[in-house]
Image 1 (cartoon, one colour):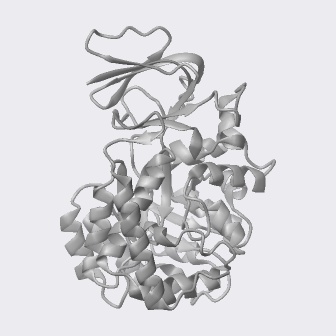
Image 2: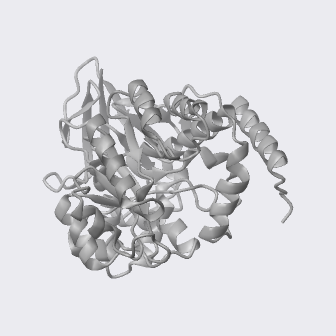
Length: 417
């Protein structure tokens, strides 16, 4: 299987290769084989003319609660406390496995449609095991790389985590810690020990500084117990002190920033600039589509605007590609020979971005999902000419609407403003 993408603006995100105003990308057997100008193609290779396109790595979303897709936009005006009550207290109790399946499937397709080739699905709708199984099925039925991050809850999560680990024996599972914000440090230590035994990366929410059961220094507490390493991702991190960010950097850990949700819900200021200063390389995430758009273009634009002067456009594009892949333990995020060929073609002749003088700055300042012409996952085209391939959307849309209406009726949610 060989594909030659010929003549596009190549943004490799590999410092050794740089960017090519007009270049070629050769894909062989699902991997990047070569990048250059005027590359030769074998007779059996598919040649794709990418003139007028920007060729770049696929985006990586390191934290998304995909199950909430059906209620898109409902929380645009919510604070975090309102979100917590509505999403988890009002809506979640009425979710059945079918609802979870459809939310995850349509949400994953949405992400793919906007160029997100890898998603870490932070799943916390585990009312019973069937919901978790349905969530996994929804991810599997969508093309693209998906990591099921199981945020199991309750007094004894170990049996359920072990059960699901048998279903997902590779690197497509992570453990969503209950975390030091909502549980004790002893419980956090037990969860991390389980994750390490099972070979799982861990992700945990940490934001704000009020109401924590053990004070406002959770990262220091985790470090003291030996709970931080290169497979630890802290979600949000708002309010963490500079020295605790340095502790994360020293441990090789990562942070996932959700710019739109954090600003809308009234979290403390974004930590991207301070994280960079501490030696961390943040990644980006959508978080939830109740409150924000489901693409990373918006997240990049907000991150740049919120940290003006603290980060550059290229920094922010690295957050959405290279850094996200690193946080998820994937060999993607840059168009480097030998890496998995996850990449995106953007329409550089669309009037919303034309003329493109600097593709990186254009992507971050003016990019949007409508520009996504094609998406390749492991060298296979899953979207072409602006349309997802091999996906029958109309019946899925109808089923998701039915799911939304049933949940809303059971929860007593009105759509009237």
